[in-house]
Image: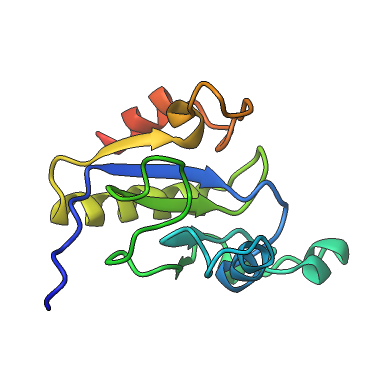
Length: 152
């Protein structure tokens, strides 16, 4: 039986809430929570892919803004309760500060996804919380500002 393509109408932006990381590390974190693997479809790196580079203050500048694949976009993600079936999750590595290369990559990735799904809308994780969810500010970005950046 052929699998029907997913109907995607949301892109949800997240942050890793860590100063370092990459798709492989997030995959480990999510598996440790009992998930079947990384819940995001894409991860946008900063200059610190691991705790060692962060602790030693040895940034790997060439990685800043690199987009890594997470879960296949053809698969349902695990990144926002109640909205995984129709969304693509993008995680920026960082807590509250993100880099220019990360934003450039996010804008480019959004454009690529929008070319496949022209009616897709952009949300931050915090904008899609259920009333019973604990409060979150992820991705710690003013989403109105970010949506304005996407329309330039």
